[in-house]
Image (cartoon, rainbow, N blue to C red):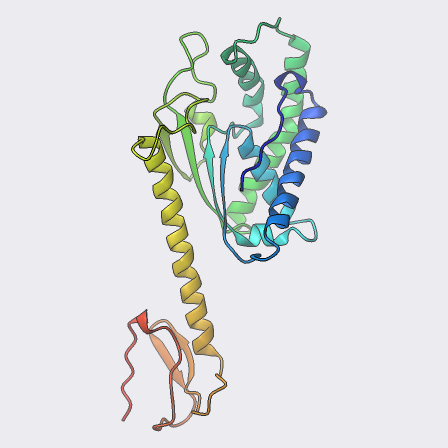
Length: 264
């Protein structure tokens, strides 16, 4: 699914920006839940551009604390950030550059910029909480950060500089485009598309392997309903038997685990 929202860069004040971030994040979270009524266990992978990354961060945080949303954080396997300003202190600069990049003719409002700096404190707190949850293991999420490699023009430069778009300790890479075009791929042969696709497919394959391993472990560690005697429990590389083994004993699990059992 896709999720969009209106952003008025000239309404970024200390109150409205943080409030709107919360509102958009809550709307995203409940929209996800409404789309997953019949598939609540499917993995969730976020791909977010620009301020959308902050919306996704806040949505994941909310899902850890609001009844009915917990399945989001438990099912989320990763977030790909694309040109997201990860630090609240950078948002005022982001606003000014974005306005110039959009070629909006507007006299700079210094009071508004100052208010944005103040409002960024709330955004920074949310960002800090998200990173703390990752470090503590409260969130089992993979993270990848893309940043723009090209300037908007000689005057504006980059909307979100590399050091403001990456999270310490997580993989990151540039996209050979400016801030606006870093998510506008020309086709399958586009280098940026190939980079994003490889990350998405890699994470999904890892998720499926993890699900297969969990299914196999559950199957091997609980008695089945068949007539043969249950042998025992299984952990990688070990098999624990319950009593003697005879011709009616059996081992249950996936055939591709590479385990071999010899019965005398």
